[in-house]
Image 1: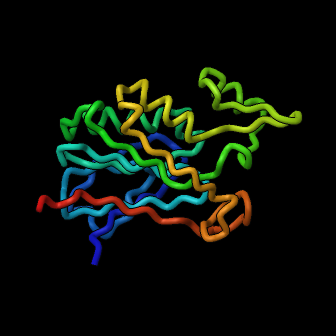
Image 2 (image 1 turned 90 degrees about the horizontal axis):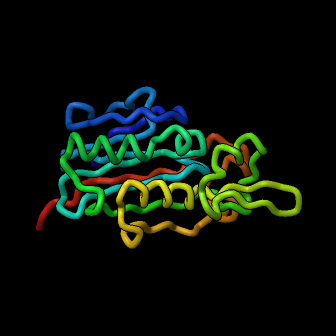
Length: 189
């Protein structure tokens, strides 16, 4: 059985460090968990938002982020990376990032007020046929690179939750169903 720690996600930027004492609980009011405890499995629930999985090449720790546009705007990635550097002693350039399936830009229409917040990100805000769309994955990639994560260490899954009927999508179905992503430190062999 997995020893899981969940998040009560709020589209914010609160990052919480967890260990085995937190197994079985849902951490309130947070959108990122970090740990260096190999007995802990982190869990995030997403529909269209980004599940961002972070691991350290040396096995010093992991992080798991729930990031929608509000979290990206409010620095959830920066707070998580900085928290991992401070608490787990990892280095940005040694981090591996996997961004899981999320809503793709062509299905993520936004309003002008949101587009203004992301105008500094090249190729992330797309205007087409008098509509505005946002590429969440591209915003996350650019934020990670600005934090000294190597671009070649960032993998973005192109699967769109809106298009793939096997995945939950709030924008498509207006459902409470979510996709679960688990992350655990790999035990040395």
